[in-house]
Image (cartoon, rainbow, N blue to C red):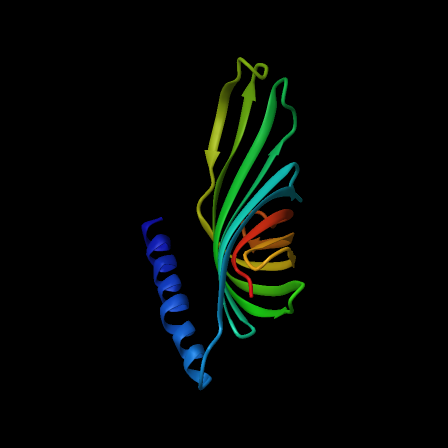
Length: 184
């Protein structure tokens, strides 16, 4: 696990501190930078709920994203049940299109997946976990797309769709998200 964390740290360093400045040097003159954070709740393809949160930097039509997504599944809330939770941390690069009303983007990058599967007995108030198995952290490919409407210069609302392709479990989901930052 330590080697995977070290690899992921090196990847993030390469992504944000080497690739981004190379892109910024390609254009002469003033380079317009946009930045924002977003978060949302929604649906996961593995079962029930999903969440996402992102920090995004956009230079011209190139978008750089650090995103955290979570997926969970529970087959019952009241009685004995099985559940699983997965979290992925990803660094993405992509293209964006925007105007004064809306913003669209699609990105792809490297994801680091972690999580667990568990079984419990008992009801909602007296739950007893009988097994809890953590997965081996796995690397995967993350694909993400955003579509949001700009309500103001610093606020937007829209849809975030994401998928993580990895060896453990293919995850996908969609959230209704709020966007805050320098949107134009």
